[in-house]
Amino acid sequence: MINNFLLFLYANQKSFDIPSKVQSGLREKIKESDFLVVDDTGTHRLVGLKFYSKSKEPPVITCVCMRHEMATAKQFAFEMRKKIYYDSYASARLFKYRVGTHVQEKDYETVLKLYTKYYKPKRHKIISIKPNGQIYINNHLLPAYFKVSFLIGILGEPDEEELHKDWAMKSKCYRWFDYGLEAVSYLGHKGYVGYMTINAKETKDIPMHANVDIYLGKYKIEDAAPFERYLKYGRHCVAIKSLNKEQCLDCRKGEIAMVHISFGPYPSQLIFAICKNDKEKVMSLIKQGRNVNSKNGPYYQTPLMFAVIRNKFEIAKVLLLNGANPDIQDIYGRTARQVLMEKMNKNC
Image (cartoon, rainbow, N blue to C red; front, side, top):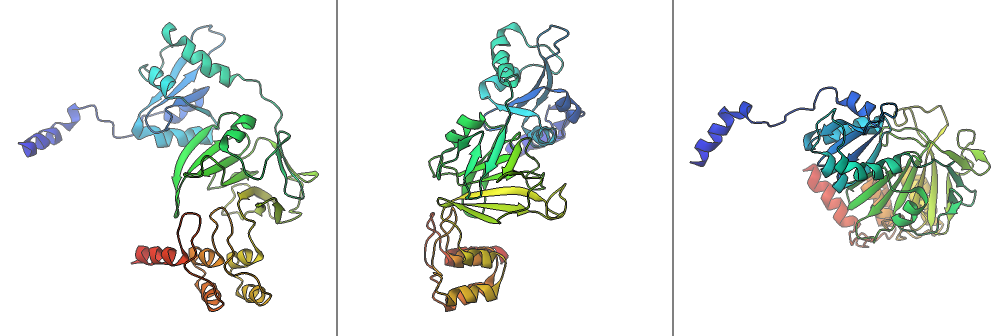
């Protein structure tokens, strides 16, 4: 009986309204929109709005996207730097409209709240990184450890939120497009920020850049040479990076592309040597008495874990021969031995 029903559905699939591809002209519809409204998860529905001030009529619905179109629609919005407001109630109210229709009077209050955010006066934005590693955003000093709510108090609600899962754990990314800023909070960290990235230039991994003045010491970032590659403030590390052409979409040689702030134990010279695959430097530091079992970074990982994660197996052998413990746990209870076993299972 079930098989017959499935065959019936297959034979008559054209009679059902089952979307299979992205609607035509989606890019133009999003370009026309003032901003976009999506549900809180950013995965179910998306609605675009446009207000024509000369006509003195209510805002028009410019686009309505379903679940299967969300990834494409958000990518277009990201490229065009369109504001995205995460509001399940508003998106559900507006999702019922057809493209090209005006918002009805019963939904005026909902739309008014959205446009109040959209027309909020813009203020001059400054990010300043001092030579000692202190970071100021709009004259607010970032403490050694802080929650996402602290950033929201300074920057306002994020333009985009996204759940992410890397090799170790789940995290949530918060992005402010105007600041080119991405803050990551690991699930289970009670809302504390694990690390932040400020993009001065647009990269392939994070296609956004800061529309804000970024200062390194006394100089604007576009005029400053990296006065120090790594700066220390409290227990966190600021890394100033120049990227190559394959990573950065609009970088000149030696130009600073991004600033990475890690909130955790300051990485040791041993970690930097491992990341550069400098075996001789690693051996030299060990002879100087550096601790091969120290914990580093937001994950509190040992040098051996760094070496295994980055496939620096020759350096991992050197560490093991000099007393590195493969069973020391990071903040999530994982060991270098477990990470290696996971890598071996994936390659099988």
